[in-house]
Length: 456
Image (tube, rainbow, N blue to C red; front, side):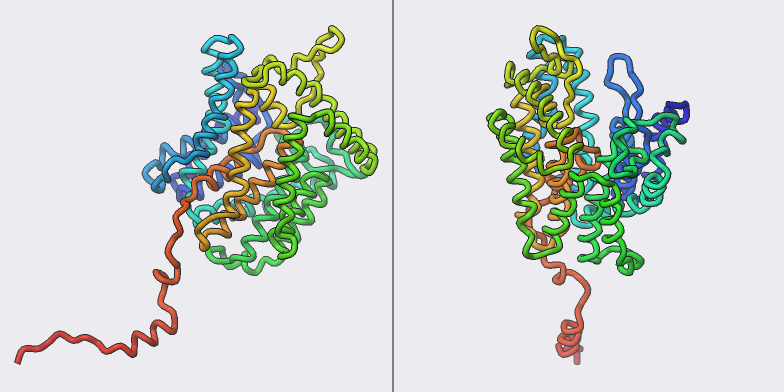
């Protein structure tokens, strides 16, 4: 990476703090998390005695700095619920694993700092700053606007090959071979992997569909932009990533087509069933999946089988200490025929969580994500259900993606916190306290006016 990449990553937090002087709190937070995820370089700056300073760390630092500047603008907080304790268990699971494996307290403190910055800060900010339907609308609009700026960059890389990160920040952020697909290129722009960009366009498609159906509070140009949802659907197709494409279209169908509303629920049930099967009945699931790979393209089938073979080795290692795991340094130490295998690949978040923090971390993490994924569909407030439902749908898509891929972005964690931090109390009918309607004005004109009595 060049010097410019280091300067951008280090200067992002103070520069983002300027936004909180000119924008409202919710808009500044949304622009910071979306803009940072889209445009910061994929870079790790080593810090002595602390976790590496990465893109996610820079975004969390910027969000916390903004809250220090505008702390008085925070809405009234909702009381803590049981899912907040579940998420706190996920935060503490890695430090507990370090202590259980005999590491000194310093390692546990470093792990706690890493979890608080990568997971805790975005979750708490989403819970604290986006508790209302209006603030969630800001988050969704910022998602759409940020993705609009990404369309020309992604189209350029599809045509010219993924080179923007190399040209601006001085190095390619991943393996170039994985950007070649179907006789062309998959765009990656400034993200860590082409799959991340495809998943981003998938959740943007969902936001565009929902905002187009419920246009209250959106600007006038958006009401005339009929091409937004088809445009994002086309970009999702051009990203040439089968998993995000299937998740995005399934979620879009469940939101748009009445007869397909149960598709996403079935996908969540299928994902949870697969996850439980891999953990407790791995051999049976492995033998059941193998025949289905024959129906996929050869390269995709080989990729899935390679991933499952590595996960089988990691699962066997994780079950040697199932309650607290082997922390980051120990869970990939796999011994096969007396030789240590150092090239074991762990792509999926669930196997990383199980291997490093055991069942304690795995249950707490996926329990929180599953709660956020379904909460919006059973919300008591019928006037806020649409906004919470789309945010829950986005969390569900991102959670399902972690079954095959790695850690979610700070935006995903903010969305999870926003869903779980929304008030459960039904709000009053907005018509009751809104502007007077024509009928109410007519009835008011028919009422006699009360004049003060005059003394004779």
